[in-house]
Amino acid sequence: KPNPSNSKVNIEFEVLDDAKYIVQIKSAQGQIVEELTHSKLKRGTHQIEWIAPSQGVYFVEIQNATHKISKKLIIID
Image (tube, rainbow, N blue to C red):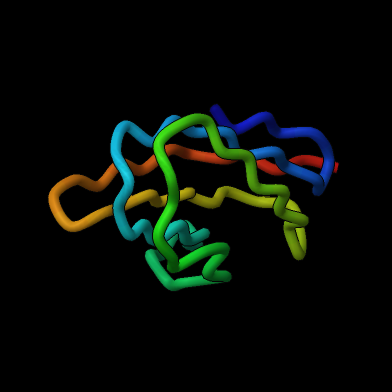
């Protein structure tokens, strides 16, 4: 559940099973802005803080070997 607030964003997500996850921030054009994690995560709720480099539209993409989700982030000053 991303929460836009100026340039600081708390990205919270639920992991249903122990697995390797990749969490990336992408630009509106699909380019990787930052990789927040690329590691095995344990089942449960996880939170990652990200500071956006500038205002604009971004996407947070969370994926494992079988699933991928993407959510829009709108960063405003």
